[in-house]
Image (cartoon, rainbow, N blue to C red):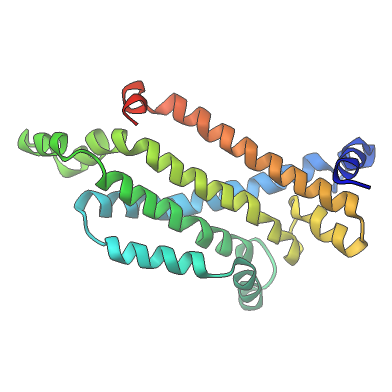
Length: 222
């Protein structure tokens, strides 16, 4: 049997579309975990990246933090957090947030630093406050790169959130973990296909957000 056969068998089975273990339920669970983790990572990475990028300080520290965050094994961190705080959503969120913060943080910092200094200097010369310069001059220009950092973090979260199944939480990872345990490769391939499809859907969402939020002039100059 090839992969396409497994995919067809999984999605054509009506039992996979109903109940607690049905595709709609598992998909909603997975999306909820991802949205929570992305919101937490953005709440950490965006403010720090914007402020440090605006003042041009802390670049080396951010690079160190990003390298350290990427070097941490997500599954190992999940096991460690489970041992420390027990089962639940918290030990799942920690590795996902740690994974997503570095691309958001570093990309936000670099995007603000890459803004043309001429309009920034002109705004300072007009007496604008630093907060207004950041949000009214630098942020609109830096927004495309900032969104790319959020997109990178979101894709990593979507792909890695399958580890939630290892500690008894739901989501699409249940198909992969349960399928491997049961030697049900139809379920394994189906779950992996759903994760891949969700990652592609995430890319489409960020493309649409960029089209709606980034001004045409910035898109053309990029």
